[in-house]
Image (cartoon, rainbow, N blue to C red):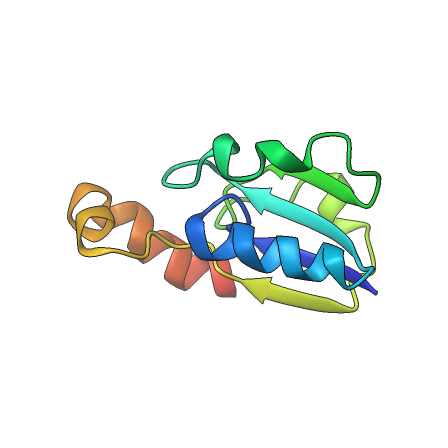
Length: 101
């Protein structure tokens, strides 16, 4: 399957990506790195079935995302902790409204 994980460089997203790759899937991560970290997916560098796209999910999609027919999408693109909510309140609202439209 061709799977998109938004927020795939976050704590939960990166673990999901690990499991999807272990299951033999092709995975694209779309992450703005606002609260996610490249370090969470650094161990996957060189993985042929993984693609990373720097993308704020509330912005117009990059062509490599908009033109890919995904079989499944996991939308985890939002600050997901009280610290993230208070540090990035507008970004949180934007990701959870425009980002899911």
